[in-house]
Image 1 (cartoon, helix red, strand yellow):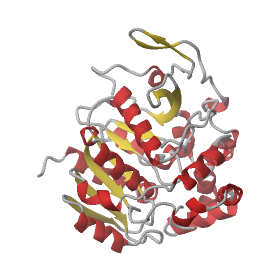
Image 2: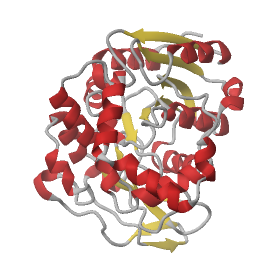
Image 3: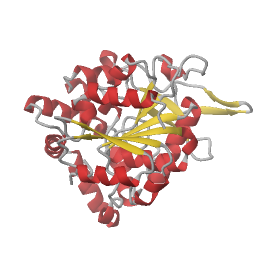
Image 4: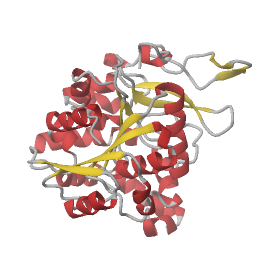
Length: 345
């Protein structure tokens, strides 16, 4: 869109078991104690914090994954403040290091609706996370949503709940999120998977210089159904109109969160991601996955990235566009699973 305009031996987070938690916490000598509930049950099995517009969505994969979204308390900065952070935690823990799934610009974990069940079937432990400022977290007291805050929030979530090196998967702008995180916290990342990576944009460019009033007007346009539908038509390789209409509702569901507009403007005026100088600092083995018919990010840029990354290889996914993990989930999941389990040097 931006380019187009563990169970087992590890402690189980309460929310992963369906126990809801809130951001009202007490500081104790031994850590943090959650003292009251902020989640609750919604209609038709959806969490109460998911916008009611979820009922308009027909895609069964999106509806099923939405029902599994939890909120986990994640500490921010060095304060006693917590963000109730939305994600889909795993039901089971595998022996291999987990796979952590990020998403595109201004999206949510629902982007993994078709691939996530297949990752579970393959026996991998998978976490589908919402990047700070997008998705379905509770950002009522809006924290900064700049790059540094997004990075630190992801680190705190990893440190609190995942606690092992991960295979970090980033599609589109999520590839920039993944590279930035891997360079700054190499101990947290074993391998990288970058899907149709958008990594050569120099931040939000002139958008960062817009007056706030103009920035809010632009963000309001970003939420509109026609613009989202147009982005969908660009992103996917020849899907039907009825499916495109439904997937547009999936892709803009998080825009109904009450804080979404403020968080998006905050990110926009902060300057956004510029990871060009970090690419050659990546130490992790990297798999680049490209939809053969991507109309948003040129495969030539993926080839450039392939040669600039120290250790990388690339796979094309035929008959798919910008989001092959949605269009061709079986193929993408096989690529991710094989790479996650490989021990090649």
